[in-house]
Amino acid sequence: MAATNRPETLDPALLRPGRFDRRIPVQLPDLAGREAMLKVHAAKVKTEPDIDYHAIARATSGTSGADLANIVNEAALCAVRLGRTTVSQEDLQESVEVVIAGHQRKNAVLTDKEKRIVAYHEVGHALVAARQTDSAPVAKITIVPRTSGALGYTMQVETDEHYLMSKEELQNKIATLTGGRAAAEAPA
Image (cartoon, rainbow, N blue to C red; front, side, top):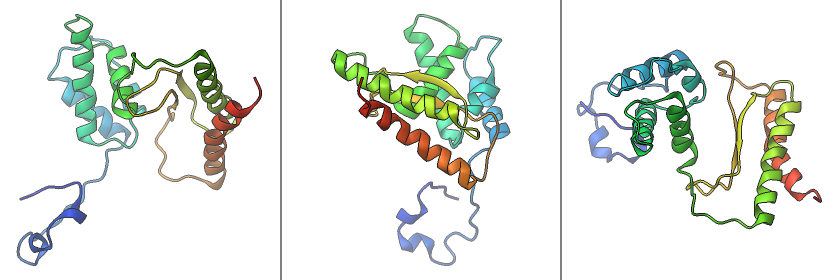
């Protein structure tokens, strides 16, 4: 028995007939699956009683079970760093951001001009997203630099699970993505 996330990197000798008789592809979890997985991983840590796992599952579309375990572990580390013995909703939300965008780079020093440009850029994304009819609502805007290299980001969280994207939704997504650049280039 074996498992891999990257079958294209396996040695061809492993894939010859008779080595592994059956292949079972495992898809990424849907909303209900992510919520259930979060609860399983969170059972291993002390959490506050009012955790909304559904909200965290909505914000983690496209993540794997390993990503979800990492989110819970990051939340536990966050709580410990803050001197608490239980994981809160805020810890989980911050850990989603850590897994998606990286840790905060608090030592990154931006000039006032750079901060203004990043702020315009992120607000541009948010304003265009807000004006779209089929766009996910904006959940958070930040200009705190992250270790992923992002100087800020605008987080949109879908209200429900989508498997297909219409032409209009794709156009809205492109408009939202380019709205940041357009706003940052506009004269201040």
